[in-house]
Amino acid sequence: MKRRIFLALLTLSVLSLALFSCAPGESDTGTAGGGAGNEIPVGEYGSLTGSTATFGQSTHNGIVLALDEVNAAGGINGRQIRLYTEDDQSKPEEAANVVQKLISQNQVVAVLGEVASSRSLAAAPICQANRVPMLTPSSTNPQVTEIGDYIFRACYLDPYQGESLARFAIDELKVRRAAILTDVKNDYSVGLAKFFKEAFVKMGGQIVGEQSYSEGDSDFKGQLTALRASNPDVLFVPGYYTEVGQIAIQSRDLGMTAPLLGGDGWESPKLLEIGGKALNGSFYSNHYSPDSPDPVVRTFVDKYRERFGANPDSLAALGYDSMKILAEAMTRAKEIDSTQIRDELARTTNFKGVTGTITMGPDRNPIKSIVILEIRDGQITKRTEMSPPGMAPPPAAAATTDTIAGGTAAPSPATSTSPAATP
Image (tube, rainbow, N blue to C red):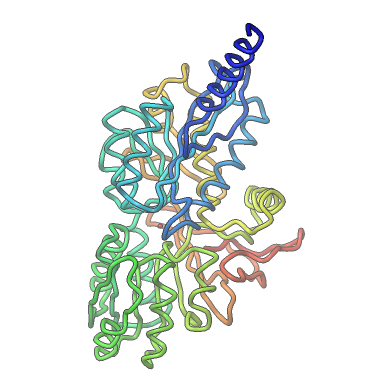
């Protein structure tokens, strides 16, 4: 009888350990450097499922690749980083919930995420209120970092992106009449449309028509019919890849021939899969080129391909840079403390990343170059690279024959001398 009671208690203990070792829905990545008390808990939230799942998945892969490199090199002054990853299901309300969990339950010292500005805007106030630094890899809406001094980003802002796209349309496409189709449920889309419109008009262009839709819509024929009547030279669609492909198809079905122009929200392997030939002759802005000859880029691309069996998009590159920026800030901090990490993030200077050289400005936003990509015959190639005022222009390089097929870069020869390219 005593033996049976002992075995029953032992079984119960083992089951209890298994149950509480990892909370439901929580993903753990990283190695334990000398026990749980010696780990540095860092949180990540992103759209691993839902309408923009490729955003979150690519970003997560980039973060994990960087994390493993940092831990393999000895971690942060001998301590290993432990990554707690939460899926916000592509929903702003869920983003707020999972970030609250990361802070209160996992007691993370910093948070990485999100890609979509609307979800960063939902979660950033929670990080700010708890004085936990948040570094978004790719939310470009200016309002994100305006939430407070604990909120940072690793990407350029929409005012610059919108102005650059307007300048490209005026100077390179030689167009003067633009129509705009905006996702009114998306803070990124609304903001980018506003900045493009202001810059385009200031440069002498005319906005001849404006229509809107809501994320998740699938029928855009009514809006496109109205825009067709305005006879635009270019159709600006500052939305996400999930709707852009269908908008391209339906615009061509209606006989519209004007090129489509968009922002970094188009970036996904799914873009050409959805839009196909209808996207031929379209353009969008992005953060980096996987066929750049830069050694930092080449090393990242090779490691990513070896690890994940795919070509890294800009979301993967920004995720990678974000983890490395955070790790460097933690290494410089005298103590692993959220406030000191925040202070060191603010001091980031001349960080040589995959997506460019990054120095945090006083508003916690970096100044970076932007790349315009062209879609032609099922391939995505670099059209041009643009630098903000006061920043040296990118160096000239030989023309590249590398392309990005199906939304990702084709492998480049080791001796390639092709130039750099790309919410």
